[in-house]
Length: 463
Image (cartoon, helix red, strand yellow):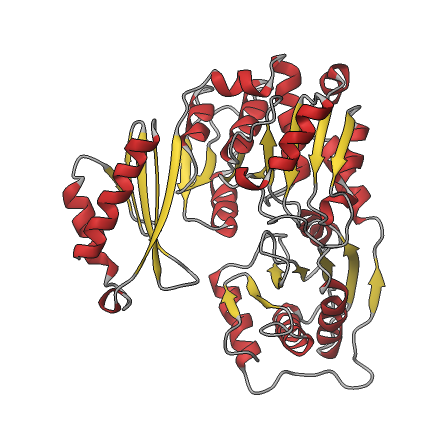
């Protein structure tokens, strides 16, 4: 196995042909299959996004799973949440998703899903890693090799489940007859997002619908990458522009004037859709987001009297906190909406349906909804860690200095250090992939946010 493969709790990723090869994929799939395979012969679901290396790696992963006696259900080219739902539908032992999400075109990855449809936690992920690094795996003999079965209905089940959600007001959306501009970046979104919006009675103008994985731009749906979508909105006089990432678990919005509004608004709008027209079932239940999510999400929840609980950065952390607290909705500020009425995973089709529900019921434009609430600016930065700060626990001196400097702030130490005030916050945490410390701040103005960042950087350098 490559020494430079990037390994996290929920999976592995690398450069195709360099760090990530069919041999590496087969090894990790076999390790996951060994972990997932119990006395009961339950299958493992496998699916992939549109990357050019996907078919090759899918075959390698299936071979690895079969080699340790695992049966496989192959759902093909689908969205990440489609695989998660398929794991639950088939009552599978787990799932493997071949996707590098928003990473550039030269990357791919394996993401591991547990039998609950959620990405692996630390204990399970560590065990899979130990198995992959071990000397040998318990390979099946000639009469115990796993079988493969195709499931061509995973996408249709996913779309039907979204359209059946109580929180999605199909009648209101169809009455509005939205004009939607759509960009699926030539990823897996082309396989389901146009159909979703057409079934909701929308008129769709789209770019980059091909599912060939040849991304025409950097694939992350952040504002600087959505210029072509903004131009399409203006050209087609669309009511909204919608972009998804290559594996369709994140969704970003462009307003009717062609301006990206920032990914945090996706979750804020979804919260307003769910809480604003509740049938009483959501009363008293919290909303969950991660520590680096914008205050626009807190403002949306507070508007309806809901408490916001923050979890460490990472989808699995947010998902498990949603389950623990029986939260009504949750997600991340990167455009990832997690609506447990369907499943506890980021889901762009769910996000899109909820955003349209809000627009239809509020009888307002995207820009009008943004203008109704307080607005903030987020600033991000990173700084290389000095050699003395790279040892475990050494960042404690940085955190202590920050807490002394900002003694009046509310401190949260779940994931690095987050200091918060009523209208601003600063989050300082170590990078999980490089020897860097990351800074993210939000305030009513860019100047105020930048000031928080600079003070954090100064204290880091002095510690």
